[in-house]
Length: 452
Image: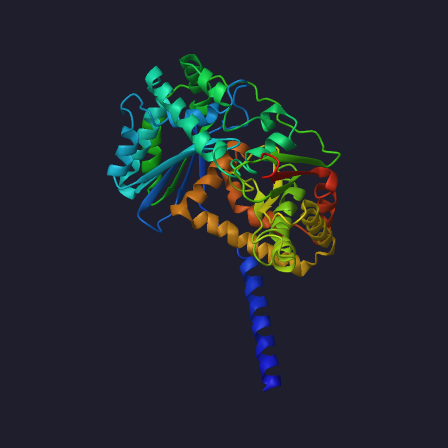
């Protein structure tokens, strides 16, 4: 019986290995048609007949990072303004139009873009395109709408950050502590005084500057005919005038040469918390892709090093979470970024004990084998496919839009797997040596006692 058991176990391992090899050999193939209108609007079409729905995403190349100085939170405030009415749709009528046609919609503000999306029945594609074009052409910018949304956003800040235990930790806090450049280090949610001081001239100027077609991309994914979609996009968007875009500000960060450590007081927190952030390599470099796999090895899943050391072995915390870009994923940003992990831990545990486990996990990276790398590749691939297929296909919209905005190349979506496969154990070790050094990290501790 023992020999038979070992034979079956060996057979399972061999079959699993063969399956993994075949899986990694397959390539992602997302249909991508990319072109630009004369006014500069980028257009990405990706037909998919899986379900009788269409996704429309409109992404503007303006996010938290480059909003005007002394107007912190303005990019987010403007996201709210985009639902307050346009030339042919009154206040909140955009939302009603989508919902009454069986669709869903939303918008969000991220580090480097503000996006709006709709998921509609396939035969309502024209309706969605017309509505998005209507608000790109011109908003109903009134004092009443501005005052109303200033109140909404201020209340959101109070509820989600100021009056919430661990409010803003660490996604909002860490950039302010770790970065040196104002564009990367200011309060993205917005200082209440800055939100109050915004006026109609600010809103008009912001809209004309950043919500122009030459600063945007429209993505259509789903069950549609490309020729028909092109006709409607040209009909509704082509006549919208372009704008003169301002020079892009310098958003670079200096190389970090020593560890930074900070303590944040939080009277509402019941236990201490810690976040450890390391500055990332530049996007699209070999080291960038290596960090994506290091993230899988050290942090993602219950087989990760940090979960094993902090949760299973030491019991310092019940969970450790994090990754690259807390406001999205490792693909949809375009500036300095962190690889970061955070956890809430028991008050009897010393923060240095947790940091020691980080050091232990990081040291393990120098021992990474090809087998470890293969497992990380499978996990990365699984995450990528989950993102593409989830939320009615909006993950696919997000990647296509991001690569069009930041790289002028939405076809990058089909090369991601190949880039990760180029990563070697030697590159992993080299990347960890430079980017996971203690002098490249910032540690932020939430202390519930310090504020009492």
